[in-house]
Length: 230
Image (cartoon, rainbow, N blue to C red; front, side, top):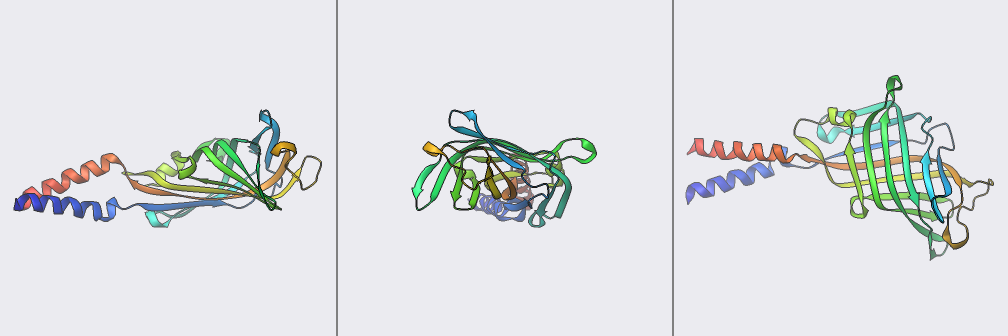
């Protein structure tokens, strides 16, 4: 019984140790100087449903802050963004506040040497586009269907045995948004979005945890160490 208690205590200590703790990585880019880089194409995602795309000629300085994971701050000065997300009709919440469903995917990649190498990508099943006056943002998190995947560039920064996990979030903050005619109104009859153009900044974060394999190896090591002490 005493030996069993010691084994349980060793395993509890393993899960409380640094290797088992979740870390956090944050990432961001500022609006690129190219200008109107994010476009919604009216009805391109279906009837009354827009299609959000991004100008992949726009050069981004993408920053990954892995201080919490031990690799510091890394800049990718020649990054790009690919976006394919649908924008369904907005619901009028009152007081000039509108919200609309967003779904699809996006990827931020390094384009050094004109070769695409993904840094991080996201799939979105139930994101939210918020329109309130001149404020336009896309809000994403794992509770509403956001899931990040690490590309080769980010994977190379992570320590062995570490992987991405919940919680995850991301925000596209649009600026200088105008409709195809050059005006500020972007929502038409029935809540359908008109074709519009704007620039965007992005911020996001993700938890980083041990892979299942790393946890299993740690458990085996903890059990072996306990037996040796016996």
